[in-house]
View 1: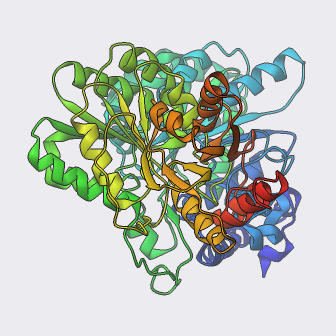
View 2: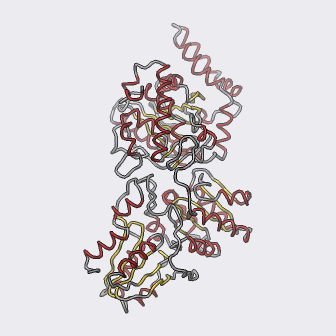
View 3: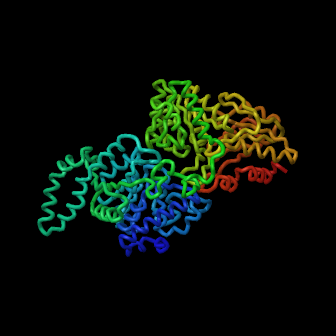
Length: 622
């Protein structure tokens, strides 16, 4: 197999065009096989195989730098840079990351995982290159979906000031995770249908420059007519050129030679240049071509049928949220739902089908989504912003100033809170208690199970101030007991009244606390079990009651300690009854790598066996 002979960029140099096409096919087959076995990002990676090969042929890597936006399309890049044999550990604990990581390879010049960052990072690298008087090419590869993020526009605006070469590859597949929305998508649609001007620029311009003496003069005369040619050829207009960024394309991103030739052309430009390539997301695998959103991120699947190997047996928290939101939408005509390019992932696609006029997908633009929701709330609507925990971080300033400062009743439905597994460091939702509880006027809830998520969502949609509900990825936990106390602001739920030692758990950790209580019951311990429910405000009344009859309080949360639930309990107890010992079970103050969630929980010390071991070491349990 030709792919087995590729161990780095130098191995591509002597291949014929026919062999390069063969290599592209083998890479696609390899990616399909590995994602079928381990899961991962499939459609996005299948769409950039030829594009990546073309870049490798045109650049001197790793001296030259490629910055991948998001990074969920970097599998071919990893394969060509000598990491093919590591794919058996793809997204597994201590294995190959699904995203670029600087500590993984010198070919990964910048770590990524979130959207719309590549132009900013690439611009920074290019400026450093020039200040340090170094000589290499910097290429930022950004998808058209990522161009819906405001940070990309800020970087484009700044890129116009570049005095030396900086290449932006716009990978245009008319998709982000779901189908793109908004004006930029419509603008690019117009450019895709008008190739005359740009082909003239690449092919004719390059040919004329080679004519002795007269060539440069002819090109200069043509440049005077550039604007009129542009207006005739591309009715949508040339936004990028009007900004001062040279535009090359659109070209076929699945034509290796066209990509190589155009990148070589772009390297000659002494300022910022955009190379617009058209690709097909999911190319080469029919199910992914037909349903690119469904095959964006996949769990292990059967290659022949495309169906997941592990059948879904129970509803997830996302499913529970989705169904309850639709139910509440029927009752309240003022209820609206927003998402940032994640209608399927967050479960609001069902709401969109039922109430299309009350659903808003703003693209990859969390900051805008938060402030738009604030405007809706100010005007009398009840907005619910469904968003992943790690993505909500991007809208922190807007939560502070646009929502909470004005006490606007926006509901934040925070999916993928806590450990999320194989997507790793950039996606673990382990900071939301910390950054949300720091904001005045913000209420923070976390359900212990599926039924409580429904109750909390109903409570939140009737609440008159900012409020958030954070819930984990995966199958919704079903309560061991039938106890289901009504939701009251800032009030915990006592599931069992024991003695001496109390476990105060919140959200996903309630089930862990229940398991601990069951295990320790066999050793004669009668543990008090409290479902905290609220990370802000915490229930101080139940704390005042517990300290009268308990010697130790153990707080449990799937969040870092700083700013979390447990540290608030510790502070309160130390102020009011310092004789009572408080033990915090939290995640370490660090970023958490990719891996199976159960393995991560054990390694990080928050599964039931690890908690019991820690409490024995601290002499809480004998």
